[in-house]
Length: 266
Image (cartoon, rainbow, N blue to C red):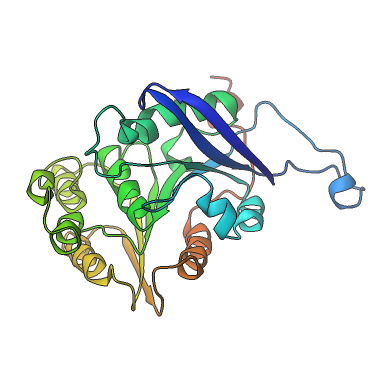
């Protein structure tokens, strides 16, 4: 699998930012030993893609440095895109990370790499506040993501802010595009399409209460929601393990593919 670091000028951020990309090895011609076989490239092929978020205080390098997911994603034949996020709840001015991930980055990455833009081929997930951010993006753009995942994430962000940050700004989030629980309820009531949800938390994690609150909310709405709990705390040992399980859970094709429209000559 290729590991690529990209630095580019973002209009959403009004400045430069960094992104990491895992790009799977292409199929190899038969009859050659391992990596010495010639690669078989096809410009018409597309890949499924996982948009993968780090947690608070992290950056584009966290997953590549601290998790061992390359072989897993290479075997799954998916592109993994890992941006840098410095503002998960849109409280900063002059830098719109929400727009970066939801709108600008998919356009930029699909220009550079042969990824599919179809909903069925796009997944988003993250650890800690990156999981909250993933849910926020997916529930504001449910037409763009088939699945969303969180690993020990404060999905009930209002409860998190009230308890961990002395309530500063919590009331301003309720009912907005930053309120994951409110967004889920609104989508359910409207009959809108929704991504399938994967939510995992360690039983010793300090985000446990925030996760249980969100879990109970999603279950009360009867959403397509998978809950995973097991012993674990807020660390990469737990996050890495859950990411691997999340990849197994995803509806993956396991290979690059020619989009239907191209196969049908449309």
